[in-house]
Length: 218
Image 1 (cartoon, helix red, strand yellow):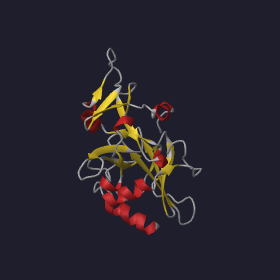
Image 2 (tube, rainbow, N blue to C red):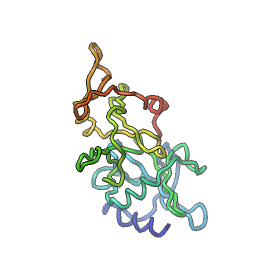
Image 3 (spheres, rainbow, N blue to C red):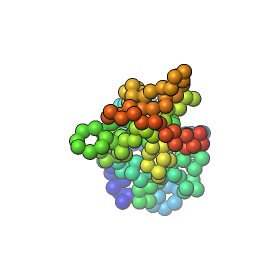
Image 4 (cartoon, helix red, strand yellow):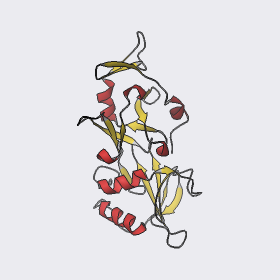
C-alpha cells in the first residue's frame, strides 16, 4: 500500500511545490522533516486543512487554491482513513492521522478536519453534504435539524464521521446559503431556534454542543 500512497501524493502535489524534504516548525512549534523515516521503511508526512476544507502540506509557505491538493483520488484516500492520532507521535500538535501502509500522514486543522463544502441535492435520494473536495465519495446525509451555529465564532457546524471527531465545519459560503433557512425566536438574535427545510419547520437539536464546547482540535 505504501507505494500507492506515494504515487497518489506525487500525482496530487501542487506544481509549485518543491519535492525536496524541508525541516520546519509546524503545529505549535514542533520540529519535523517532511518524509522523515523514524523507523526502517516508514515515512512520516505532515498536513494542514484550513477553514475552507483545502488540504496542504503543513510546511507550505503559501496556502491558497493554487497550492492545495486537488486530486479527488488522493483526497478520498486521505480523508477516508482519517482517525484520531493515537500513534504516540505528535499527538498534541497533529491530533489526526491518516495511515497508509507504512506511511503516517499527520494532520492538524484550522478548525475541524472535516469541512463541508457542497450540498449535493441532485437525484432522487436525500441531500448529502460533501466535504474536503471528495464529491460523492466524501459525503454524509444532510441533517438540517442538527446544524449547529456557534455564537462565539459565528461559524456553522454539522455532524461528521465519528472517526474524524464527530462534527465538521460548514464552509462560510455554504453556511451563508443555509442561514437563509433559519428562524429566530422573538427577541432572540444571537442563535436560531428552527430551520425550514423542504417545507418542514424543524427545531434545531443543538446536540453537537458538547463536542464543540470541548474545544476544536489543534
